[in-house]
Image (tube, rainbow, N blue to C red; front, side, top):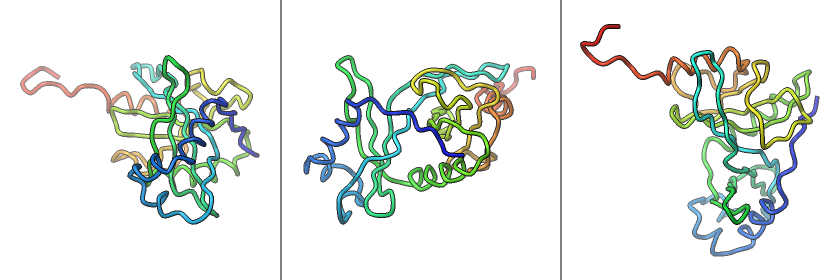
Length: 194
């Protein structure tokens, strides 16, 4: 079943295209793969990036949209990503980057493409755990910029995942968020009753 990738805001895409066309932006970026790429660099697969601000003991979370991420393809592979962010003046280019999340995102998207149910792909960041997941939202027609993870949505941790959480293994939100809750809870102080 194909994924239903939500359309990125046109101004966000324009900022990425402008940055790709700027020798200064590309050469000052700390992305050797992008600087050394042969052929045109094309932004594709825009994914809304949401941040999980807090997880409740019930295993539900509050999220907020922080930007859009585009994979930058040169030839037959993604060599980098471009991130945009929302400012008071509208969408702005934030930065280029590379690293393990590029290949991991591509792998997770390929895994999701062969699932029976249609999904809308998004990215969900859990900053306190240094964790990024592919969030497969069960309503493929939803507005990709809003909403919270539904219990039946899937989260696919991207590599590198935190210790004890397997990368590229899909988890229902109802199953994974309670696990994250225990990891995000503060540890008891030494000498305090458990």
